[in-house]
Image (cartoon, rainbow, N blue to C red; front, side):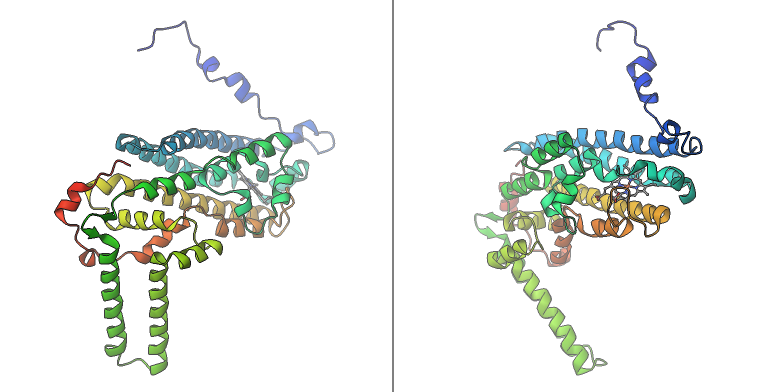
Length: 366
Ligand code: HEM
């Protein structure tokens, strides 16, 4: 218990004077030329401010997660705290997605009453939103369809410098990649897991080939050949896991991000998630996918909101509006490699058994 250091007053502690005095509708300021204050501009401001407050909390939790992963050794006890912080971020994201419902009680006509007063300001300039993106692992240079200059040019100097500086600090994606690379369990004395795994995959693909060849009496020769071609593609995809050149080619083409070692170790965690010592690393990877998915859902929801409010009009920040936002939702993903690991999952019954002595050697405190 902390010693009582004097009386605390609710409004002072929460700085409500500042907080509640921070809604200043432009339509009030320009009421004389704008036919009076627009009732819904207060809602517009409050909703944006609430978003920014939640962004602040996300950054606060993200900073703590980044600190944990910055260590060269991440103790298991700290991993549970990471999982707990990820769960909080996920809950907040739920609110962020749900909050659009409140904003959509404002009709497009009501928005039009004050929209022009906002130009050229836009959520495009939300420095905290960009900070979250960058800290997760989405650098401005990774962005598709947006000229970096266009993007950075819309920020003031302070925000621009801060964000560019953040880009030089390792992101969550980078730190988790390094953490995954340090995971020691896939190549141990007397047990080369990947050799065993490849044998299982080969057997599964062979079974598939037999099914296509023999059990598809109703299929035409052409349809069979298409299926066999697809199977050959699956084989190539599996090979790319183990062929460092193929892997590097995918990285060069921006089809993969994580290093081969990190991907293989992440796959091992996914495959053997039922082992108690892999439960926490599995929860970490799952939480990162959840967060990526929630941001994508937020982006689609926001793109729909923009379409509902603007139709095909351009945004106040000068982008193509709904079209730009939809493309950003499709492309601005961070942990896609983890989603794509599902390609390489195989049924539990075909998993190579981990020898008991190997299980004992495993030390998952990485
Ligand atoms: C009437 C409501 C809204 C409309 C019509 C709208 C529209 C747009 C448009 C058209 C853009 C693209 C950039 C531009 O040309 O301006 C944009 C970007 C953005 N908006 Fe909104 N927005 C609305 C509400 C919000 C709210 C409540 C937030 C919460 C903070 C928000 C956050 C953002 C962010 C972060 C971006 C950048 C997205 C990216 O580049 O991926 N917007 N908005």
